[in-house]
Length: 431
Image (tube, rainbow, N blue to C red; front, side, top):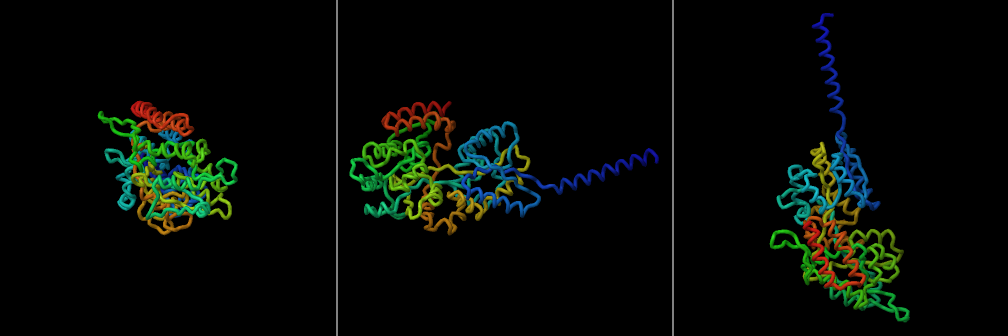
């Protein structure tokens, strides 16, 4: 064989090999890694079912489901961004997502999303993930309200008529009802049935979200344009209500100082507390799963301060800027959060979808497990200012949590707590 013919043969083999390699690459599916924070069994099942449905329908784009827990997700993501070994999509919440976007870690989603999704997700939810320049750093898909759970039998026994969606209670009316529901049943001089109990072990987000009903925002822009903390009369209202119910009226049990809302359920089931105000709407699932047979409970509409407004962060899906598969990730995201799938995910977590078309489905209007009253509460959700503030996580953990724990343990007054939160809080968020 001549040198020329040998060279042509080598070229032909090289071309054939390249074609075969290209065909192999063309047939290999794109693999996406999706990090989920679903934690309740029903929620995990819902997410896995959606992922399985996508994989069955899309052999060329396969999604790997990865479970991460809420306690470790922040460190996990920071490490992923720094090493650029990122998932293609991840589930988190709006506050940190806005911060990650500002640091350049996330893909700006506006050009990747369909008009159908953009127009169907309600404006209040979009506000939680959109920065001042209009950049969208995640798709909000779940949000929660704070509700009041009540013992139906104890209400009936005391002759207390539950409020309705059309005629909700004010906070003062709730306090009056709590007084009627607070009893010394065995006559030993000690209260054994309290009108209410507040889970206060981690109180900050709850206080800040409920304060909005009184017009209390806690975070304001100063004359210099920077954020500052102010705890004035609107902010003090919710602090006074909780402390006075525990230590003045004695209609709210002090048990809640060291417990979370769900940790109060054993006492709630036993009739020790007639109401659990300000508990997350998702907690209803634990009553359904763990409540004793014959336990009758219900959901009250949001309480009125000046309004029924509540703050709420959203749970989100984002795509890292370092993902090489952003277009495919956006396609899966659209499927994951279509009308029916978003509804399924929300029901799995006992939360609310952010798409109007999902929110209006019949499953969110039923009286079963209080869905109708709970769903109405979601109509009062709004963006809480704390989601816009830099260093909020540090403010919550190092400033507000220890001060509020001192307040709710009755070691300091509301005014003292307000002064400390203002001084230490402003320094922290401006750091």
